[in-house]
Length: 307
Image (tube, rainbow, N blue to C red; front, side):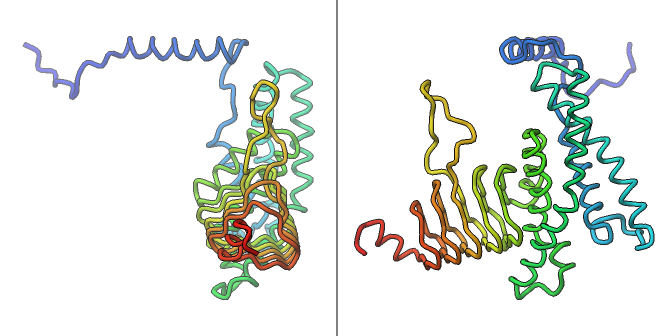
């Protein structure tokens, strides 16, 4: 009589499940991936998260870098960390390029090297843009006691660090990496900024939860956006076959010094003129002149043709 302990649970149908999953994978690959996979085909969300955390430290070493870092060691830390993270980023870039082009090649490896180097060269510019974002939040929020508090605590700044990095990747032609970096911030902050959005210096996203900024949105300098604001599309242009056209301009243009209060929904390729103020909970699908003040009441009246 056996004295071995009985395994908890049941006898799982492992062979059937493994075979079923194999069949599902093969059906997908037959339809979407004509080449035979030679390993992991796509970039890693986990590795990109590590890369972004390292780059945050590179950009703000004495605030977001290691807690034991001293000023005299800043350059050494930045150089070492940057080399490590760029090597890792280069591998992720190559994975995206290889996936999009049917496999790795020497030309793609050289392109990955160049794209990663180009990304690195933009980091000083990204730091200056983020300095403007941090300063805008500090100056725009009476509750902020210091720029350090803003950098360490404000979800809008976390979202903008990710966006500035993601937008550069998007511009360089690796949109999947860019989208992963953007979604890492989205999941942590509730702020959804597509990496294609063009955002000038000094954006202040106050509170931030529920903010949505679409791919083709263009935002000028010193813009302030409150929680639950949407800069979205009103419609999606299609081609002759009825398929949605990718990348067509469909989101708002927000000029310099605009303020958009909580809950406003701004849809379509419209322009909010310089210095305009958009009130809370406004639903807006038309352009507004510079310096306009749009409230929920006058927006509804104009939509009804009463003014």
